[in-house]
Length: 69
Ligand code: SF4
Ligand code: SF4
Image (tube, rainbow, N blue to C red):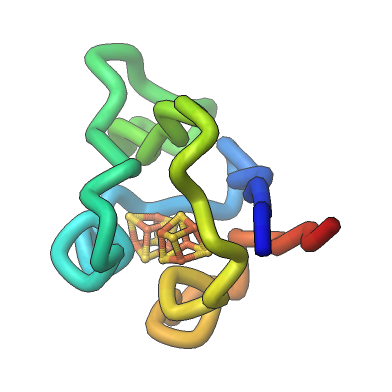
């Protein structure tokens, strides 16, 4: 199954949990800051996302939306 995620840049606090737990290592930290002054995480979206939703489950800010299809 293929998936993709969207990360709400303004909810993200750059805690890196999603980066650590993504089994495919598809998430990185942005080099820009969001409105609250945190560097938000970014999805590399290279077609390897399985839609497993691990990233969304571990996110304490509920900033990740997962789409499967
Ligand atoms: S849904 Fe799974 S594979 Fe896709 S980015 Fe999140 S943790 Fe990684
Ligand atoms: S787990 Fe959530 S708050 Fe932490 S870096 Fe990822 S998207 Fe941002």
